Length: 454
Image (cartoon, rainbow, N blue to C red; front, side):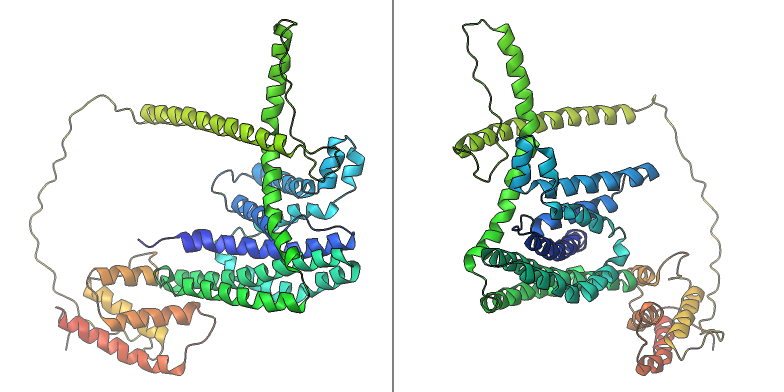
């Protein structure tokens, strides 16, 4: 069985990266227009887009209530996460100035747009069409945020905008064309049955595209006069985002520890002094008088250990309960011995084979008529009859596995699928070859054990 990860994992990842990259260019332009540097990059927005895509393609919780409440709430959470990545916002919240925090980093709410864009990719069958529309409109549309960013930014802010927008544009081009190629290969596999996942040429295509973009990035950055330190600064952005995410996730653990410490301090003697727990600061902008980086790192390590222990403990409990439920559901009923006796039917005479010939109701000078006439011949033969609700690709695969190895029927089936489902018309030579392929199939059936009427 061939691996499904190129279509199940790599294609959605490339789509999410393409969506997040063009949103990162828009975000960088809005930040430059407001006189601020970019705190959100293509990686962060792509992760939010992938989360939206996972929500849209979920297999459970498909009720109307979940659809009506889940998307707005999760999009709001994604927008708040993007908004909190600004150190000024976190500093204002730590100081208790909510009004000032709400007036800053408004472009960070594009995280909600990223989640919504991911949710719009609900149907896998429309991957090729959606990425085609994205390339058609986003490639020329990226000129607008580039012009806005260069017009609004000056000096060091202009270098920061150029670096952020340049990296996002490069990732958009590479991921969008990769997603388009993979989506079209998947569409051909669904329509014709030809499995592209066993052919490693798609992997070399992606590696070649990545190498070409890498080679073109260096001279393009030199032409745009983007310093190397600005490009390296954009690569460090996801690390800071990960650090902030860990702090936000472990903050309830520190709050719980503080509550427990205050409760224990009231029970201990007055002469016993319990060390006070200090929460890690969310301000990484350097406004404080002294740095608490060492305290924050130690606190994060301790919180991570507690978090891992808590998750392992919860998993052990869940696994035990699931095993208990499985045993209760699979409990054997009371033993009862039964026997099934199949009556032996009397042998019947084998019916005489029917005549094999192409029905006159189908025109055999085109791929559709020749394929339908071939299905009539297989039905009269009786060995490889096409089943009800069986697609042409599935019927071809099953019949080949059962001994129908005639290449003529394979060509007839492929030509029929291309004629019915492909947007492009078949060349005239395929129409000319249809009758000959049908005659070749009938001859093969005649030589494989069936004798058609004269």
